[in-house]
Amino acid sequence: MSKEVICIEVAEAEVQKWAELFDAVLDPDTSAKLTRVVQSGRLSLDEGTSTFTLKLRTPIQLENGKAVGELSIREPTAAEVRGVSRDGEEVGQVIRILSVVTGQPLGVIGQLKLKELTICGELFNFFA
Image (cartoon, rainbow, N blue to C red):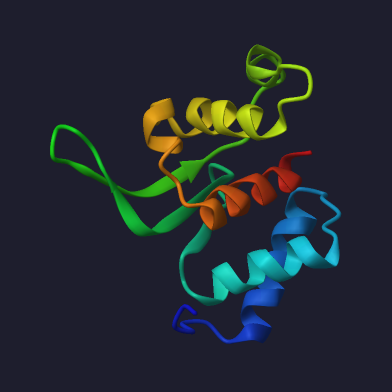
Protein backbone atom coordinates (compact mmCIF):
# COMPACT_ATOMS: atom_id res chain seq x y z
CA MET A 1 0.00 0.00 0.00
CA SER A 2 1.23 3.50 -0.82
CA LYS A 3 2.24 5.90 1.89
CA GLU A 4 -0.48 8.48 2.62
CA VAL A 5 0.70 11.94 1.61
CA ILE A 6 -2.69 13.67 1.49
CA CYS A 7 -5.48 13.05 4.00
CA ILE A 8 -8.49 11.22 2.63
CA GLU A 9 -10.87 14.17 3.03
CA VAL A 10 -8.63 16.41 0.93
CA ALA A 11 -8.13 13.69 -1.68
CA GLU A 12 -11.89 13.06 -1.93
CA ALA A 13 -12.53 16.79 -2.27
CA GLU A 14 -9.91 17.01 -5.02
CA VAL A 15 -11.47 14.17 -7.04
CA GLN A 16 -14.92 15.74 -6.57
CA LYS A 17 -13.57 19.10 -7.73
CA TRP A 18 -12.17 17.46 -10.85
CA ALA A 19 -15.51 15.78 -11.54
CA GLU A 20 -17.23 19.15 -11.32
CA LEU A 21 -14.55 20.82 -13.46
CA PHE A 22 -15.01 18.21 -16.21
CA ASP A 23 -18.78 17.89 -15.64
CA ALA A 24 -18.16 14.17 -15.09
CA VAL A 25 -20.18 11.64 -13.13
CA LEU A 26 -17.93 9.10 -11.44
CA ASP A 27 -19.24 5.84 -10.06
CA PRO A 28 -18.24 5.15 -6.43
CA ASP A 29 -15.62 2.54 -7.40
CA THR A 30 -13.86 4.89 -9.84
CA SER A 31 -13.99 7.74 -7.34
CA ALA A 32 -12.49 5.51 -4.63
CA LYS A 33 -9.66 4.29 -6.90
CA LEU A 34 -8.75 7.80 -7.97
CA THR A 35 -8.99 9.09 -4.39
CA ARG A 36 -6.47 6.47 -3.22
CA VAL A 37 -4.01 7.51 -5.92
CA VAL A 38 -4.45 11.21 -5.09
CA GLN A 39 -4.01 10.35 -1.42
CA SER A 40 -0.68 8.70 -2.21
CA GLY A 41 0.50 11.90 -3.91
CA ARG A 42 0.88 10.19 -7.30
CA LEU A 43 -1.98 11.89 -9.20
CA SER A 44 -2.49 15.57 -9.86
CA LEU A 45 -4.23 17.86 -12.33
CA ASP A 46 -2.91 20.98 -14.03
CA GLU A 47 -6.19 22.88 -14.30
CA GLY A 48 -4.70 25.35 -16.78
CA THR A 49 -4.06 22.65 -19.36
CA SER A 50 -6.59 20.05 -18.08
CA THR A 51 -3.75 17.53 -18.00
CA PHE A 52 -3.42 14.84 -15.36
CA THR A 53 0.02 13.71 -14.18
CA LEU A 54 0.37 10.16 -12.88
CA LYS A 55 3.65 9.30 -11.15
CA LEU A 56 4.44 5.66 -11.84
CA ARG A 57 5.21 3.37 -8.90
CA THR A 58 8.11 1.93 -10.85
CA PRO A 59 9.72 3.89 -13.69
CA ILE A 60 9.71 2.19 -17.08
CA GLN A 61 13.25 1.59 -18.32
CA LEU A 62 13.78 2.38 -21.99
CA GLU A 63 16.28 0.65 -24.26
CA ASN A 64 18.34 3.86 -24.45
CA GLY A 65 18.91 3.78 -20.69
CA LYS A 66 16.45 6.57 -19.90
CA ALA A 67 13.42 6.04 -17.68
CA VAL A 68 9.82 7.23 -17.84
CA GLY A 69 8.69 8.05 -14.31
CA GLU A 70 5.38 9.76 -14.98
CA LEU A 71 2.69 10.15 -17.60
CA SER A 72 0.94 13.37 -18.54
CA ILE A 73 -2.57 12.48 -19.69
CA ARG A 74 -4.64 14.98 -21.67
CA GLU A 75 -8.12 14.73 -23.11
CA PRO A 76 -8.17 12.90 -26.44
CA THR A 77 -9.84 14.42 -29.48
CA ALA A 78 -12.65 12.64 -31.30
CA ALA A 79 -10.31 12.02 -34.24
CA GLU A 80 -7.74 10.40 -31.94
CA VAL A 81 -10.35 8.12 -30.41
CA ARG A 82 -11.64 7.17 -33.84
CA GLY A 83 -8.09 6.54 -35.03
CA VAL A 84 -7.39 3.94 -32.35
CA SER A 85 -10.82 2.31 -32.12
CA ARG A 86 -11.28 -1.32 -33.09
CA ASP A 87 -14.41 -3.33 -32.42
CA GLY A 88 -14.30 -5.43 -29.27
CA GLU A 89 -10.78 -4.46 -28.21
CA GLU A 90 -11.22 -2.18 -25.21
CA VAL A 91 -7.84 -2.74 -23.52
CA GLY A 92 -5.97 -2.30 -26.80
CA GLN A 93 -7.93 0.88 -27.41
CA VAL A 94 -6.98 2.26 -23.98
CA ILE A 95 -3.32 1.44 -24.63
CA ARG A 96 -3.35 3.09 -28.06
CA ILE A 97 -5.18 6.23 -26.91
CA LEU A 98 -2.81 6.53 -23.91
CA SER A 99 0.10 6.40 -26.33
CA VAL A 100 -1.47 9.21 -28.37
CA VAL A 101 -2.44 11.50 -25.49
CA THR A 102 0.75 11.01 -23.45
CA GLY A 103 3.13 11.15 -26.40
CA GLN A 104 4.76 7.93 -25.18
CA PRO A 105 5.42 5.05 -27.60
CA LEU A 106 3.20 1.97 -27.45
CA GLY A 107 6.16 0.04 -26.03
CA VAL A 108 6.26 2.30 -22.96
CA ILE A 109 2.50 2.16 -22.40
CA GLY A 110 2.62 -1.61 -22.87
CA GLN A 111 4.98 -1.86 -19.89
CA LEU A 112 2.58 -0.16 -17.47
CA LYS A 113 1.57 -2.28 -14.53
CA LEU A 114 -2.10 -3.32 -14.63
CA LYS A 115 -3.00 -1.07 -11.69
CA GLU A 116 -1.54 1.98 -13.43
CA LEU A 117 -3.20 1.09 -16.73
CA THR A 118 -6.49 0.81 -14.85
CA ILE A 119 -5.96 4.23 -13.21
CA CYS A 120 -5.22 5.77 -16.61
CA GLY A 121 -8.38 4.20 -18.00
CA GLU A 122 -10.38 5.55 -15.07
CA LEU A 123 -9.08 9.07 -15.80
CA PHE A 124 -10.86 8.94 -19.16
CA ASN A 125 -14.14 9.13 -17.18
CA PHE A 126 -13.35 12.82 -16.67
CA PHE A 127 -13.23 13.34 -20.42
CA ALA A 128 -16.33 11.28 -21.34
